[in-house]
Length: 328
Image (cartoon, rainbow, N blue to C red; front, side):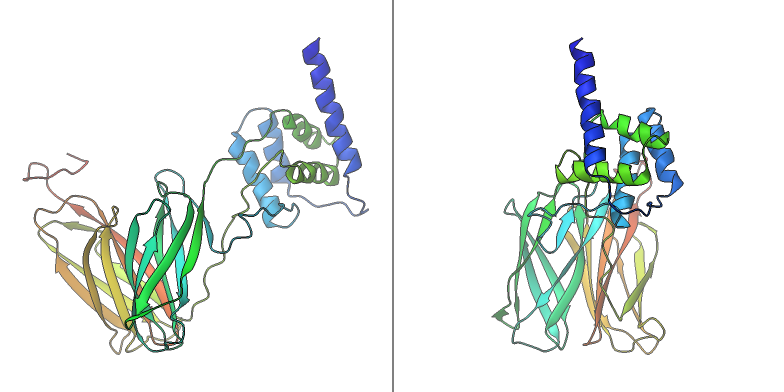
């Protein structure tokens, strides 16, 4: 009896939400039919909750739903931890202050847990630097402090922030709302109004960090190299720099090679030739670990900059000394 009463309270609450917060506009919203199909399948437990959330994220992206801002949303340069086994990119940019000339800046990134990451990045004539690095799922959340030096002087400090990727949870009783909408018992406007109310009251929480706009660049980098390299042999890589149409001659290219543990293996620096190419090679140590290596590339012509990441696998034959390849 108590269960029936509680269910009636929930249903009446939903009807109140829909009635009270129904949009006043007479024009009916046009929501893609696939979203209604998703809601129907989710209410019938035919698909995972994450699929229904993706539908709501689409409505946020298209402006149909609005996510209330929180304090963390107002922080600039905020990134979401990637899911397990995945990675994402962080863009780091700043200025050297009054020092404006072409040179390299040494950056130190202080993580919330006290660990540091050291980077070398090119600086433009304007005193602006720009580079990228990988954000991994096991990094701590919180504020990351970016400090550094340029031509012996301290450069202005900047920050970026990392948030958790906790999967939002949708209360089970909202499935009734989704079912009514899928069955045509309530309109698109009513469905959106009801969901918007739940968002405003934080009964539902949806990650607002959808697709981030790419940093505007006038330089573009193409990195070509071997996808797999046997240890004890050479890896050769060519970096091609263009402005989207023409090759850039004389662009400065800075390269660092790291493993996934952020241990630097080797670094290079040079300039592109008349064809916009900068090539380099090195021998993979014959006792190197069988793993994925990351090649971070930064390029600048003194006015614009760009960055790219190339990865390749180091491998060895099973039976070789110290060969710890996962395939063995």
